[in-house]
Length: 371
Image (cartoon, rainbow, N blue to C red; front, side):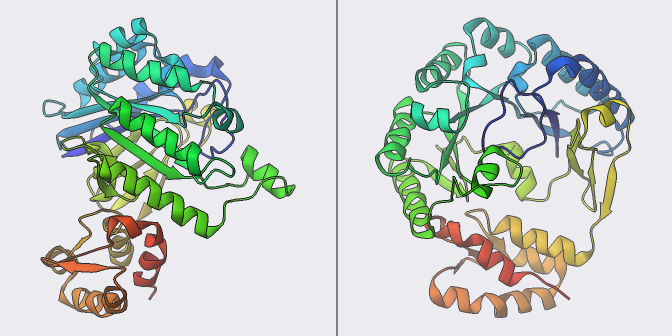
């Protein structure tokens, strides 16, 4: 089974933290969508007949696309790929785009899951991040999406924002729980070069929260959501029973996926491809770049992605995919982490306890093969 990702890079307003490829100039939307249709034709053999299980519109802000645009891309995809077994079709959306009329039309296109970029229910925090919606609009978006028939909803939340931890974060989490959003992605703010926050940081006008604050806020997110019945199944993802994100799981479990659009990435099991990060270049047909993964690359990616999940590393799978020597070496290298409780081994699987996943990067890096 495979996934298809559509990258819609346009935004009405650029958020202060965002370092994804995007543009606030919407004038090339029609030309870009036409180029995406051409790419669907050109890459119709990429998945080698494998059935598509998930489809995902990310961005940017896909909710700037008309329902007709979304429907046309989905129809074209079904003409070029086997979509008879699709289980999930997601569209990322900004709260202020989700009017009742838009939601009703969107529901008829084949979109059955919405990922709503809420980020916070604190209006002052939203203004700091340069978001274009209010807390009230976020609440209304969730309610109206449900009224339109969207039960499979996800919402994004950002923590680690200077000045907006503590009670502000607690209130945002409580509001999310009260709204009964079945899937929540909670991300720690990272200050990236080239973003508005990054430029402020260079001037000394903005700084990341201290490590102890990060740990406390991560702990708060974990406790409040798991106490409310959410499963903490990946570093940044929480779900009520039956509502895990199926498309994102493809990235964490090495499933093939095709990326359509500028800066979109693809993976066929051995090679990684990525399109040019330029709207003009993409429209003009600039070729994708390609990287062939070595066995070491594949092993390191396996370790990295599996240790971000609650299931962790399957030792039997390691032996099957990479051989008994790597399995033995892995057990030796994880011994110090299991002794400290940072890793736990159970039923031939090694995982980081979800409440400690904030330290996953340090653990993962220590287990990488470098030579």
